[in-house]
Image (cartoon, rainbow, N blue to C red; front, side, top):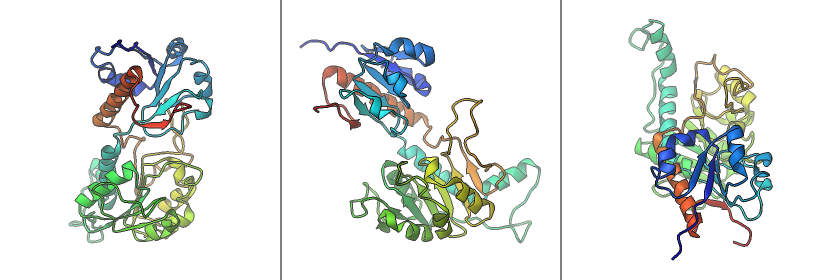
Length: 333
């Protein structure tokens, strides 16, 4: 049996350099791993047979004639110029972010329902302010016994649902295939089609947006959708910023028409300090929001699992074995 030929692998996603030991199997991988960006990446592009990235432009892909596998470092392909890929290039994705994002959703939901952000700010100002010293101070509420409404029920939605159930919440969802079996371990109180979005919003205490960004979902959480929410309900977006109408959300929060929001995904995605701000409107002055820079899935476990998937697929490609997580198969396959 012949030994598989080592592959040339170009990794352009900077965060993956922190997991070089996993990618290269502590240096034991037979493949040539080039963890590079910018001009350094361009020097390896012509020979690369595997590209590991979170985004890829037509210009970059045009310089990669030997490319056989483009491996995305996450679950989304919206930043990949798919039309610029040759017919023989496979595209694979990886995930592992469901449990991390689910914990983030629960954390942010509790912060919003307990007013943690405001309490933290007052304590930092030296002010002791709670329901004992102020009879008008609002009480927080439990997650247990309340209703979680999921907009989308894929890997992330399933992870959120399981954790919410463990905390005593009822779970409802709208999804493209409402009659399909729910993810393993998920017990739905109700399931409806995407057309029943407003019904879901009106019945939920915590609304979690997990759908992918498509032309159908862009702006789907609009002014009318937000108006359908309960005035004390909170919205947590861990999908993509443009799924939610930015102006409508800002208006609903600033006017107190919903209880609050956790915003982890934004309408812009800055990558350097000189980039424009992540939103066109200013959410920083609002007390009823928790703002995070698209980090809900950023745990060590998420990225170590992704790095393992990637190196396993590179080995499988070299060995002629079936790849996992394929979202675009080569022509003729």
